[in-house]
Image 1 (cartoon, helix red, strand yellow):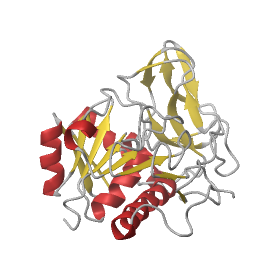
Image 2 (tube, rainbow, N blue to C red):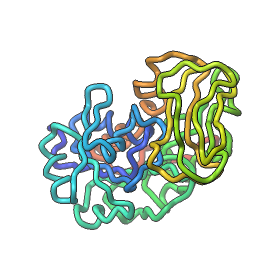
Image 3 (cartoon, rainbow, N blue to C red):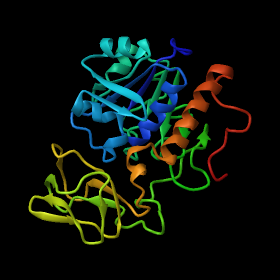
Image 4 (cartoon, rainbow, N blue to C red):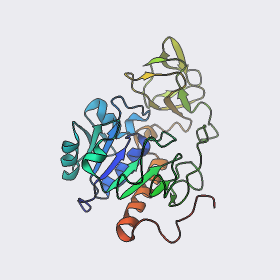
Length: 280
C-alpha cells in the first residue's frame, strides 16, 4: 500500500463514513473502522458497518471484514486486502493503536468525545465540531454549495433537523419509527413502492410510504428502535442502482477527507486559503 505507515481509524461505519473509507482504501491507506454492537445505519447495502452483522460485506468491490480486537484489526488493515471493522463503541482502539489519522464519522450531530489530541491529524464530519478546537479539520456535510468543503477554523453549518430535498421531497424521505420496538419489514431495499404501500410494522404500528419511490435503506431488524428514530430511506428518484452504490454526497465527503490528509502529509495542517469558516 502506498501509505501503509499511515493508519486511518474511522469512528462509525455508516454510509457517509463508508464513502470516506472507500476513497482512502482505494488510495492506498490502511483503514480500520469502529462501530456499535448493533449499528443504527439505514443504508446497509452501502455501509461497511454491515460487516458487524454479516462478518464481511462488499461495497463497490471493496470488502470490509469484522475483526475481534484492535491488534487483529491493525494486522488485517495493514495487509491492504480489506477494511477492518471492529465493534468498539467507545473507540478504545484509538488509545491502543495510536493511528496517525482519526476521522469522526459518527454523524451524531454533536461531539461524542473526539479530541484534537487523539491523533496527529483529527478530522470530523458535519455539525457539532469546531475546527482548531475539537479537531484539526471539519468537513461540511450539508447538501448545497458548501458540501465537501474543508474547514480549518470554525464549524460546519448547524444541523437543520430536516433532510435535504431530493426531487422536491424532504418530509417523508426519512422514515421514522412510529413507536418503540423492532422493525418487522415486509419490503426490502431496492423495492419500488407506491404512496401508501406497506413497508413494515413496529410494535403493531404500520410504516407506509409517503410518496412513490424506491426503498433505499432499512435499519436492521435486530435493532430495538425508539419512537422517532430514523429507520428507513425512501428515494423519489426511483433508480434501483442508487440503493447499492455509494452516494454522490458520501463520495464528495470522502474526497474532502482524502484531500485533507494529503495536504497534511504534504505540508502540515491547514492551507493559505482554507483557514476560514464556511460562508465567511
